[in-house]
Length: 140
Image 1: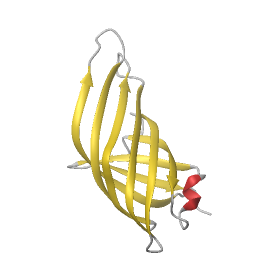
Image 2 (image 1 turned 180 degrees about the vertical axis):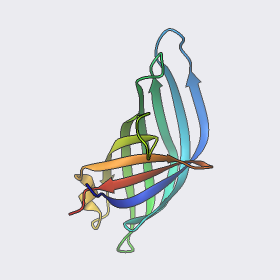
Image 3 (image 1 turned 180 degrees about the horizontal axis):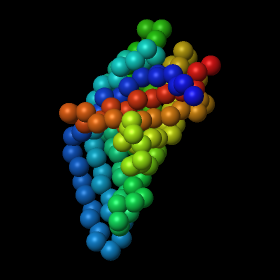
């Protein structure tokens, strides 16, 4: 199935806070900012973005849950914001990405209102400064 890329969030990692637990799950919280490029939206990641990862005792399962807000311009040139809650799992069997997620979005953009109820797919790809999160949907 071919997916349509909506936009890419270019994540710049800021700080990381670890809770190491030798007898059970461990946790890492990663704060970040960044920028967004794509045909539907261009903008920035507002301060306060955080990715919380829970890592099983033996490294598996490894879940992630990121929450962040974007501010910028939609594809009609109007200012808007997009809230993203992005949940997923690190998947060592993926050949083209580090992980896949199921993003949930809320936006005040009329042009992008489809994001409020669309089933979306996210993929994480490593970069020199952090991670690129590519957001896709099934084409209409």
